[in-house]
Length: 171
Image 1 (cartoon, rainbow, N blue to C red):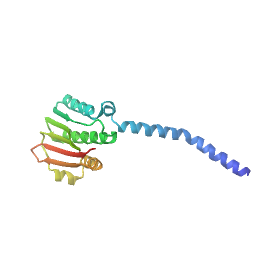
Image 2 (tube, rainbow, N blue to C red; image 1 turned 180 degrees about the vertical axis):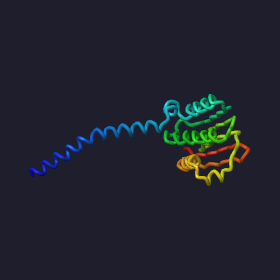
Image 3 (cartoon, rainbow, N blue to C red; image 1 turned 180 degrees about the horizontal axis):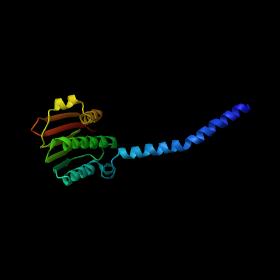
Image 4 (cartoon, helix red, strand yellow; image 1 turned 90 degrees about the horizontal axis):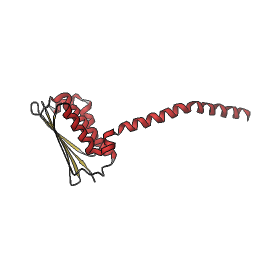
Protein backbone atom coordinates (compact mmCIF):
# COMPACT_ATOMS: atom_id res chain seq x y z
CA UNK A 1 0.00 0.00 0.00
CA UNK A 2 2.90 2.35 0.81
CA UNK A 3 4.44 1.57 -2.59
CA UNK A 4 1.15 2.43 -4.28
CA UNK A 5 1.04 5.84 -2.58
CA UNK A 6 4.65 6.47 -3.51
CA UNK A 7 3.92 5.56 -7.15
CA UNK A 8 0.84 7.82 -7.20
CA UNK A 9 2.93 10.64 -5.75
CA UNK A 10 5.56 10.15 -8.45
CA UNK A 11 2.92 10.08 -11.18
CA UNK A 12 1.30 13.23 -9.80
CA UNK A 13 4.67 14.96 -9.68
CA UNK A 14 5.31 14.10 -13.33
CA UNK A 15 1.89 15.53 -14.28
CA UNK A 16 2.59 18.75 -12.39
CA UNK A 17 5.94 19.13 -14.16
CA UNK A 18 4.24 18.69 -17.54
CA UNK A 19 1.54 21.29 -16.82
CA UNK A 20 3.52 24.34 -18.07
CA UNK A 21 4.22 22.58 -21.39
CA UNK A 22 0.56 21.66 -21.70
CA UNK A 23 -0.43 25.27 -20.99
CA UNK A 24 2.07 26.48 -23.59
CA UNK A 25 0.74 24.00 -26.15
CA UNK A 26 -2.81 25.27 -25.58
CA UNK A 27 -1.66 28.85 -26.18
CA UNK A 28 0.10 27.77 -29.37
CA UNK A 29 -3.04 26.03 -30.69
CA UNK A 30 -5.04 29.18 -29.94
CA UNK A 31 -2.48 31.36 -31.78
CA UNK A 32 -2.54 29.06 -34.81
CA UNK A 33 -6.35 29.04 -34.94
CA UNK A 34 -6.43 32.86 -34.83
CA UNK A 35 -3.93 32.97 -37.71
CA UNK A 36 -6.15 30.68 -39.77
CA UNK A 37 -8.88 33.35 -39.80
CA UNK A 38 -7.38 36.34 -41.61
CA UNK A 39 -7.83 39.59 -39.69
CA UNK A 40 -9.59 41.43 -42.54
CA UNK A 41 -12.00 38.53 -42.91
CA UNK A 42 -12.92 38.46 -39.23
CA UNK A 43 -13.50 42.23 -39.17
CA UNK A 44 -15.38 42.91 -42.41
CA UNK A 45 -16.34 39.55 -43.84
CA UNK A 46 -15.52 38.25 -47.30
CA UNK A 47 -16.49 41.37 -49.28
CA UNK A 48 -14.39 43.67 -47.09
CA UNK A 49 -11.43 41.29 -47.15
CA UNK A 50 -11.56 41.13 -50.95
CA UNK A 51 -11.75 44.93 -51.12
CA UNK A 52 -8.55 44.97 -49.05
CA UNK A 53 -6.91 42.51 -51.49
CA UNK A 54 -7.91 44.76 -54.42
CA UNK A 55 -6.52 47.85 -52.67
CA UNK A 56 -3.22 46.09 -51.96
CA UNK A 57 -2.94 45.06 -55.62
CA UNK A 58 -3.60 48.66 -56.70
CA UNK A 59 -0.83 49.84 -54.38
CA UNK A 60 1.46 47.32 -56.11
CA UNK A 61 0.69 48.94 -59.47
CA UNK A 62 -2.00 46.64 -60.87
CA UNK A 63 -5.11 47.94 -62.61
CA UNK A 64 -7.78 46.14 -60.58
CA UNK A 65 -11.51 45.78 -61.13
CA UNK A 66 -13.47 44.26 -58.25
CA UNK A 67 -17.12 43.33 -58.70
CA UNK A 68 -19.13 41.89 -55.83
CA UNK A 69 -22.80 41.08 -56.33
CA UNK A 70 -25.31 39.54 -53.93
CA UNK A 71 -22.67 38.01 -51.67
CA UNK A 72 -24.66 36.45 -48.83
CA UNK A 73 -23.64 37.49 -45.34
CA UNK A 74 -24.77 34.07 -44.14
CA UNK A 75 -21.76 32.20 -45.56
CA UNK A 76 -20.21 30.20 -42.75
CA UNK A 77 -16.77 31.32 -41.68
CA UNK A 78 -15.06 28.13 -42.87
CA UNK A 79 -16.40 28.65 -46.41
CA UNK A 80 -15.37 32.32 -46.30
CA UNK A 81 -11.82 31.40 -45.29
CA UNK A 82 -11.57 28.78 -48.04
CA UNK A 83 -12.83 31.21 -50.70
CA UNK A 84 -10.46 33.90 -49.45
CA UNK A 85 -7.50 31.48 -49.53
CA UNK A 86 -8.41 30.38 -53.08
CA UNK A 87 -8.47 34.00 -54.23
CA UNK A 88 -5.17 34.68 -52.44
CA UNK A 89 -3.49 31.71 -54.13
CA UNK A 90 -4.73 32.62 -57.62
CA UNK A 91 -3.61 36.24 -57.08
CA UNK A 92 -0.25 34.98 -55.80
CA UNK A 93 0.21 32.97 -59.00
CA UNK A 94 -0.65 36.04 -61.09
CA UNK A 95 1.90 38.13 -59.20
CA UNK A 96 4.62 35.46 -59.49
CA UNK A 97 4.15 34.29 -63.05
CA UNK A 98 1.73 36.28 -65.23
CA UNK A 99 3.48 39.61 -65.78
CA UNK A 100 -0.05 41.06 -65.82
CA UNK A 101 -1.00 44.73 -65.74
CA UNK A 102 -4.71 44.22 -65.05
CA UNK A 103 -6.70 41.88 -62.81
CA UNK A 104 -10.45 41.40 -62.74
CA UNK A 105 -11.93 39.83 -59.61
CA UNK A 106 -15.64 39.00 -59.54
CA UNK A 107 -17.76 37.27 -56.91
CA UNK A 108 -21.35 36.86 -57.97
CA UNK A 109 -24.16 34.93 -56.34
CA UNK A 110 -26.65 33.51 -58.79
CA UNK A 111 -29.28 31.11 -57.53
CA UNK A 112 -27.58 28.71 -55.13
CA UNK A 113 -24.14 29.15 -56.70
CA UNK A 114 -21.31 31.53 -55.89
CA UNK A 115 -19.31 32.30 -59.03
CA UNK A 116 -15.73 33.48 -58.61
CA UNK A 117 -14.02 34.78 -61.72
CA UNK A 118 -10.42 35.93 -61.66
CA UNK A 119 -8.96 37.17 -64.92
CA UNK A 120 -5.62 38.68 -65.87
CA UNK A 121 -4.06 40.09 -69.04
CA UNK A 122 -0.73 38.39 -68.42
CA UNK A 123 1.36 35.91 -70.34
CA UNK A 124 -0.97 32.95 -69.86
CA UNK A 125 0.40 29.43 -69.58
CA UNK A 126 -0.05 25.85 -70.65
CA UNK A 127 -2.31 24.53 -67.90
CA UNK A 128 -1.66 20.83 -68.58
CA UNK A 129 2.13 21.36 -68.41
CA UNK A 130 1.80 23.35 -65.18
CA UNK A 131 -0.46 20.68 -63.70
CA UNK A 132 1.98 17.94 -64.71
CA UNK A 133 4.79 19.77 -62.88
CA UNK A 134 2.77 19.21 -59.71
CA UNK A 135 3.09 22.73 -58.31
CA UNK A 136 1.77 23.27 -54.82
CA UNK A 137 -0.25 26.38 -55.79
CA UNK A 138 -2.48 24.65 -58.33
CA UNK A 139 -2.91 21.63 -56.04
CA UNK A 140 -3.86 23.87 -53.13
CA UNK A 141 -6.45 25.72 -55.21
CA UNK A 142 -7.93 22.47 -56.53
CA UNK A 143 -8.09 20.84 -53.11
CA UNK A 144 -9.89 23.85 -51.62
CA UNK A 145 -12.38 23.96 -54.49
CA UNK A 146 -12.95 20.21 -54.03
CA UNK A 147 -13.45 20.70 -50.29
CA UNK A 148 -16.19 23.22 -51.08
CA UNK A 149 -17.80 20.76 -53.57
CA UNK A 150 -17.11 23.30 -56.29
CA UNK A 151 -15.83 23.23 -59.84
CA UNK A 152 -12.95 25.11 -61.41
CA UNK A 153 -12.13 25.91 -65.02
CA UNK A 154 -8.81 27.31 -66.20
CA UNK A 155 -9.07 29.16 -69.51
CA UNK A 156 -5.51 30.02 -70.45
CA UNK A 157 -3.00 29.77 -73.26
CA UNK A 158 0.51 31.10 -73.57
CA UNK A 159 0.29 34.73 -74.69
CA UNK A 160 -3.42 35.17 -73.92
CA UNK A 161 -3.79 35.79 -70.19
CA UNK A 162 -5.80 33.60 -67.85
CA UNK A 163 -9.37 33.35 -66.67
CA UNK A 164 -10.18 31.16 -63.69
CA UNK A 165 -13.86 30.39 -63.12
CA UNK A 166 -14.91 28.73 -59.89
CA UNK A 167 -18.46 27.74 -59.01
CA UNK A 168 -19.30 26.89 -55.43
CA UNK A 169 -22.70 25.65 -54.23
CA UNK A 170 -24.20 27.67 -51.39
CA UNK A 171 -27.51 27.34 -49.61
